[in-house]
Length: 415
Image (cartoon, rainbow, N blue to C red):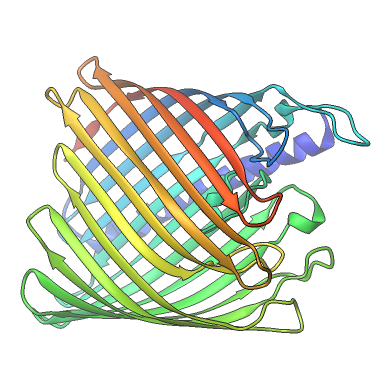
């Protein structure tokens, strides 16, 4: 076995062990928080996915088409007592790729099996009501992937380097009665690349403090004053020096419950960002921020629409920018929830501060799923098209992806 492969397997096993230990540790901590028996729900599942990607490396020229196979065992756990709640989702996808990347000057063709890897996806919420007014808890997400979009919601990175990112967010909420609440939170983020060239391995860490004050006009109208201060740092990398920075953002957000299942929000504010000029080339930035959103869910319908303007938090090579982004997703179940039809997409306009680059990117996806065997299994197919245009050569691309999935789920409720 090659040394690099052995090291990768050992790292994967260590990370899985740490995650499992953390999960059982949190369950042990939460158990004594309530003397009442918990209502448990455990849902294991496994998904087999085949896909075709017409431009896996998102290249402007000479796109590489790839056939892929992904096997994803997963488990969802939820435990609820009178005063506490634990919600856990964990997936461990294994990605396999088939094909050959064309030869480049000075090198031969690359077998795409070198892109195979074991991914991780953890989402955790643990919270308990300490008193009638005070609630404490934490959330955590951990992702190991080659998909750059998980590094930042506005990310424009296209490299397929493997990395992991962990975000942990303890919080405390104080209820001031019918008129509102105050929430204090801290978020720590660590992002670490596992492969790639020196110029694309921009590890980083972020520490963020958050204070949100909510005023309730009545049961359907709410006003949030959100204050966030954070610092992002990058270890020194001579091949790709990055600017550490401090950011402060303040936003006023109005939320209105349009009905029992549909909520709207609109808000705006400002963000200031100050870079350590000794570590990179990025200039200080300041921009207004605003957002508009519509979110809703029933037993058969899901809707999520949003528009925002803000700065990117994480990037590489000091390629910071401000962006306008529109997101949309709609899902509907038909025929006694047997047929699932869904669609969505986004549009993003990015304006870079360290160059004259501007990009326009849009993506559309749609799919249909069919449930059978007492809705324990679902067969689905999905199509995704993405296009990026830019005012400078070498930054645009087109990509077509087709997915076919078979998912099996088992539900074990326990009281």
